[in-house]
Length: 330
DNA sequence: TAGCCGTGGAG
DNA sequence: TCTCCAAGGCT
Image 1 (cartoon, rainbow, N blue to C red):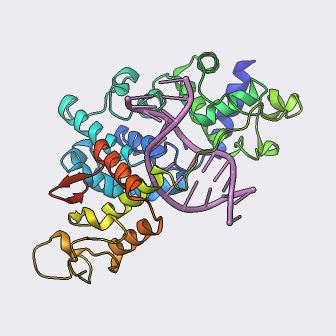
Image 2: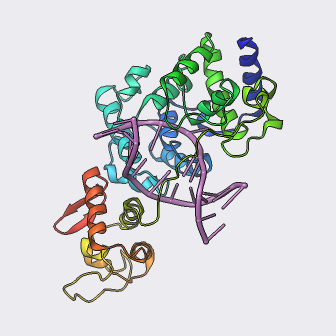
Image 3: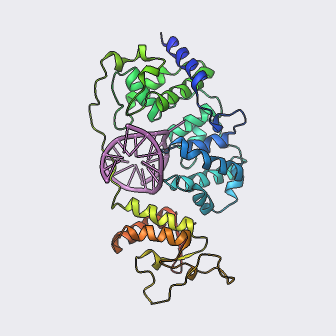
């Protein structure tokens, strides 16, 4: 019964799985970890180019650990949630200093790494080390909710019952459990999607409890996160400025009017002069990447209080560093 | 534990 | 245009 389901979905995965580099034969546990962290709340298409850059630049954890954390944040680009870059750098440091440069190969060991929670630990244990681990992500939760639970969507937050159900559904065979994890996740990602599932393409539609029940609608309406006018929006705009800046940047420039002491704005972009790098190379209204990023920040017309709060948050999180009135990445 | 933390493409 | 949401983790 369950074995039939396992076989069907695993066979489907063998035929239809996307060709992703972190699934390729030459993958490393480090590459798998980096992909899993990058993929947290972030679509595959946007992760691909950044993951390739990271693997080229930092093929081993020690390579990343040898650089300042700010380099990880800058190379993170616009993936979002830049604290993930910070945590990945911290994980690389721990792996290098406490594990001889090799990833822990158990769920428990992985769970101890910064930025690695229950999902990522199970995913790396399964996909990188071939262990039998119960992987539960948003795709798997949705597939289970429909296929087995007969519901349109899983609960707003992961429940203990869902965890138990996932454990029961996991194949006893180790190798098949790995394939099942990947297959279930893939099904949720490309067929059993959140908004408009492609049930006609689903290999297990005949076994789907939700379809059998007549596709009942969700029992609740997900609350979208606010964005415009939030601290997060301001933080994001500030981070864009810091990523663009190759040198420390005057804190005053974050405010719409720029420096208050009346210092003349200096035109040009970083590196345009032969003098040593200094904060005054950047100016409000200047051209180039930094000027553009500053313009986008100023366009938000954030009040001074909120700007202060957002910046304080970034400093507290370690995403920015302030030295003598100038800001830079860590 | 609910709220917070980015970003941009799809519908 | 605007809403939704994409392989979560942390506090």
